[in-house]
Amino acid sequence: MKKHHWFIIAAALILLGGSIFLLLKSGQSDSSEIPAVKSQAEAEEIVRTKYGIPVDSFTIIYDTVHRGNTLSDLLAPYKVSPVIIDKIGKMSRDTFRIDRIRAGQPFALFCTSDTAGNSVAEYMVYENNGIDYTVYDFRDSVLITRGKKPVDYVEGSVCGTINSSLWMALKNQNTNTSLALTMSEMFGWVIDFFGIQKGDEFRIIYEEAVVDGKPLYVKRIKAGMMVHMGREYWAIPFTIDSVESFYELDGASLRRTFLKAPLKYNRISSRYTHSRFHPIFHKNTPHLAVDYSAPTGTPIRTIGDGTIILRRRGNGAGNYVKVRHNSVYTTVYMHMSRYGEYHVGDRVKQGDIIGYVGSTGWSTGPHLHFEVHKNGVKIDPLKMESPPADPIPDSIMPPFTDTAAIWREKIEAIPCPKTSTDSLPT
Image (cartoon, rainbow, N blue to C red; front, side):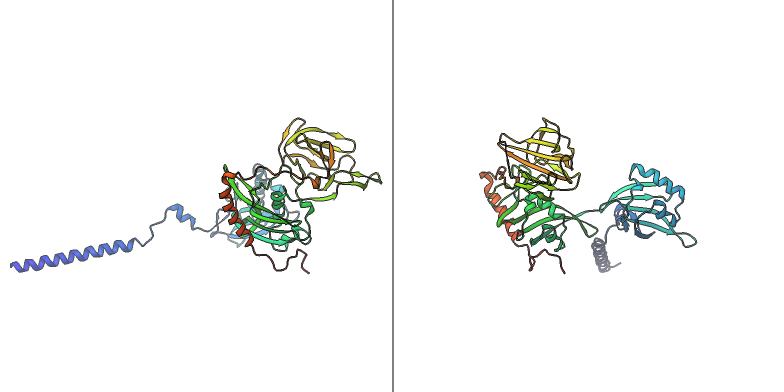
C-alpha cells in the first residue's frame, strides 16, 4: 500500500475516535440529568398514605361516632365478624379503651370489596383527638397501634380593642379563643384579667398548632403588647443564660413577685368591701377578700413563693390553706373541694397547685375566697402592688435594646380592624 494511503487511513481513524469520544461524553452529560433510580425507602415515600396506611388499594369511608354507638355498630355493617370485634374490644384495654369512644369523634374505615360487591373493612382508624389516633388492623388477626398526625406551627398575629370581653374580641376576628388564656398567663403578672375594661387594647404575635390545615390551639405567645387602663404593657422575649423571659421596653421584667390572681381567667363574684350583704346570714358584714367564681375542681395556684403554714378545715372557711410568703405577706385560700399535694411546712413555688375550687364551709356555690394579709392586716388583693423580678442587667442592655426595637416594629405593624368592636354581629 502506498504511503499516502496509510496517512488517509490514520487520519480517518483519528476522526472516528474523536467522534466516538464526543458521543460518549455527550451521552455522559445527558445521563447526568436523568434521576438516579430511587432507593426502596424513597420509592415508598411517593406512595399515598393516610394514617400511615397506603390508600390506593382501599375505599375510605369517613364518619363520626353517633350517640349510643358501640364498636359493633361501627364495624358489623362492613363484614367484620363478631369474633374479631370481641377481640378488638379485649385487646384495646392496653392501648385505648374502645368503650370510651365518644359521640362526635371522627373515624375512618379502609375497605375493599368482596365478590358480591359489599364493602369489607380491613382497617379502622379512630381519632382520639385532633392529633392522636388509634389504628385497628384486622386483615389477618388484630393489630392495634397508636399514631400522631404531623403538627405544623404557624405564626399568627391579632390586634383588637375590647368592647365587652377579651374572648369575644378574639372570636369576632376568627382567632383561636384559647389565646385569651395564654394572654392571661403571660400578662397576668401585671394585668388583672378579672378587671379587663372596655377600651383596653392588645397586639399579639403568637404561634399556633395546625393539623390537616386546621388550627388546633395556641402553642405560645412570641411577643406582644396590651393597653390596660391607659397604660402600655409590653412582652419582649429575651434569652439570658439559655432561659427565655419577657420584659418591658425599658428592660423591666414582665414577671412579678406575685401573680395577680390565683385562678386562670375566671369571674369575680364578690370584691373586697367593708360592707357586703352576706348571702347566708342576710345582713351587711365586711368582706375583706375577693371571691372568684369557678367550677368545682378548678386548680388553685399560690400567687407567690412561700411556705404552707396552715392546711385544715374550718367552720366557715371549709377546707383552706394559708401560705406565708415573707415577713410581710401571707395569703389564704378558702372553700376548697380538696387539697393539693403540699402539706404544712412544705415550700411552694409561684403557680404551684395547692388545692381545688369547691364549696366547703359557709358557701352558697363553688368559688375561691382569697385573702391577702400585709403585716397581719387584710388588704384588697386587686390593689396590691407587686415588685418585678430582676430586670435586664446593664451589661447586656445594648443587645436587649436592639432586640426590643425589632419586636416593637413587628408588633406595631400588626394590622387592626377598622371597626374596633367585639360585640356579636347582628
